[in-house]
Image 1: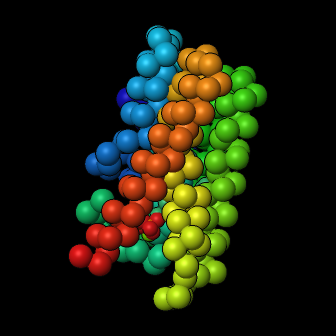
Image 2: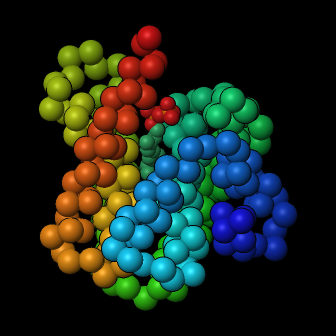
Length: 199
Ligand code: FPP
Ligand code: MG
């Protein structure tokens, strides 16, 4: 419900575009990790589900853009947004979700949390650009590959984990530990995602 309710626009086409992938069957791993991390430190606020959508909106925005970059026809067993409505619509739908996520975050008025989100999305773009620089590069070093995976995927999973604890007012040592947990989990997650392309 929160994923649907936090999308505010009077333009029906934007809803159709952004909901196509957003409400398609996904694991919703990032919002789940965010909620669990907040609860781990005793957070019980009603706004936790709204806040958790930030991580699914950013993730979905990045997938809409990624499917344009990868020229992908399918996503979650359905035709991709770029295939159905074209690249321009997919990029703009991603921009809408991306902006919506920051609109929700601003409501919370937490400078540290905003900093986490902006650092994260900047790194995601860096990772994706680094991947572009290494397209078809069979001699890529393990170190560069791990950097790409860390930036493009792991930092958002890490931010979901550390962000939940941050919202709950956890001590900075705990926030850092949850961030490290998410980062390692994110690296493992992307390693498997890449392995599936080969096997
Ligand atoms: C999927 O990788 C893509 C990502 C994990 C990150 C995409 C990031 C961007 C496009 C840049 C940042 C954009 C925003 C809006 C912050 P993949 O192609 O390996 O995975 P797939 O198999 O799911 O397509
Ligand atoms: Mg892709």
